[in-house]
Length: 188
Image 1 (cartoon, helix red, strand yellow):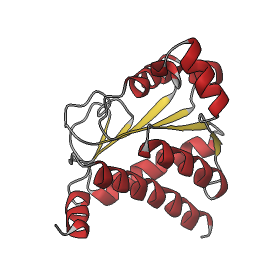
Image 2 (image 1 turned 120 degrees about the horizontal axis):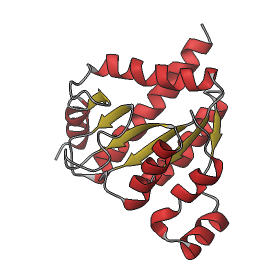
Image 3 (image 1 turned 30 degrees about the horizontal axis):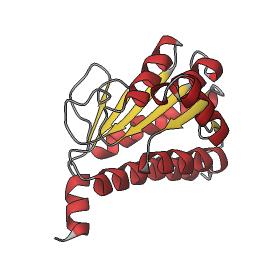
């Protein structure tokens, strides 16, 4: 197996769509739309929350730092161990993100939901909460095209692959590209 070839082949098949429209943008057009959503939230001084499980949690933590430092955005980490274990114990693991959003998210804030399967209940509940609070959502999913999170965001990135490593690598690459584009725009 040529991993790099598989990765680039799948990257070429990534679908970036807007809510309510199944027509995929070209990759470059989709990236422009994603960047514009982030820049609008920065201009509005919205809070930005990144969430995911496992490898996607590592991406979420990394992007929380990169969008804060390099993107100059107001990011908030939802990964404090004491808070996660408290909420998991007192409510359920399915509510560890939605409860934090309920307490911290304001109307107009942004949730970036990263989920390889697109079916994790704690991610779905967080998307529900963000929508109920008047927030916006960007989804990054993979695996099955009918996953529960795939079309829930104002912008949706779908990686048509069922291999965690490929899906997570592409999610990370796309988010890293977004923050790099923002940095380029800031530097003229």
